[in-house]
Length: 183
Ligand SMILES: [Zn+2]
Ligand SMILES: [Zn+2]
Image (cartoon, rainbow, N blue to C red):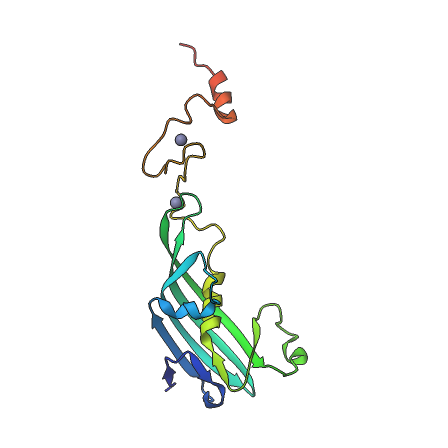
């Protein structure tokens, strides 16, 4: 039976041989700790659920888990606020700050996230934050079919249409225009 913790601060010394299960399920404000005062991200992490197994081999700590979260972010096409679900598996390796890591990690260096911990405690908050942020696409969309805003009048084309496109025919349409059907 693997013991479970919900604490975001893990005492490395107390990680049992069989590992420690970490379960986290939170709404809202916890992630603000990841940002410095005055640093305002252009998204908000709503609900986050994280489940992972934390194991230790001598002083190296391995975290392997799954996360799912809901990101409040503005669609990059229509600029409307949208809820973006993200799901990911992640692995994370932490070594004590001054340890020599070269020989130990030559093998899978590129695949692994290797980070350091200080003293006896590992704070999971920035790790979870980072893993969630890594899942946010550079161009978040409210839907793959989002029509965006009219570049001329700014109308949200998902909700209404405008007349800006009338009169200006793009090149693809121009080809069709010459393709006259004779009847
Ligand atoms: Zn959109
Ligand atoms: Zn328009």
